[in-house]
Length: 113
Length: 113
Image (cartoon, rainbow over all chains, first blue to last red; front, side):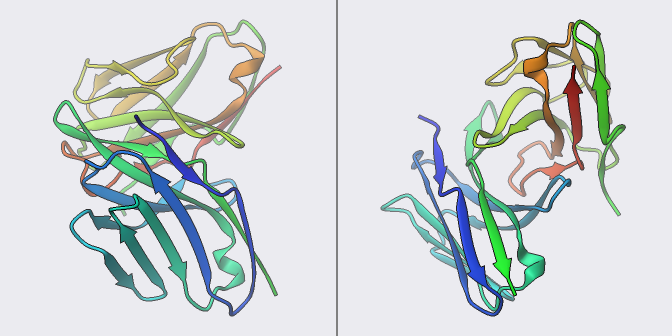
């Protein structure tokens, strides 16, 4: 089945690390994605990880993938107020020759000064 | 700068009106998608298209139709708008395989009164 779960809220102080977690259900997912949505805007692709990797780092962002537990996390180091947004994880499912993305409900990150 | 453009940021329509939401992409992408986003429900796929004049139902197609007469343009049509269609509508596009994720527009916030 297709189901991607995330916690709804996370609150951190500026300068701390943030960890946003996600669980997915389809073990055949080939790619997993993290998107960021700022207020009033569309979704912006932050990073993605191929399913044969267990970690990917990109500047302040670290993605960890535990394929056995179907668990994906996004760590933001030195979180800034500009990181306040909704973060969506998504898994990709092969559907008639292309990757269909299934999104989680989103985690609202609030960064306080 | 490549992008997906949605023609309206905000729309207010009356119950029973026929509503057109337009989306244009300049990346020569084969696939295009319409999602609606509601608090606590995340993104739900309404319709998608993998080629000109081709369309496929997503998870919640009831009350909607789509049109793709040209590769770059994908229109979402609400035949007779109802108050439960008040939502944020997001258009996205991707390459044939979609492995690099989707590119999203900024969204159209539709209010049906």
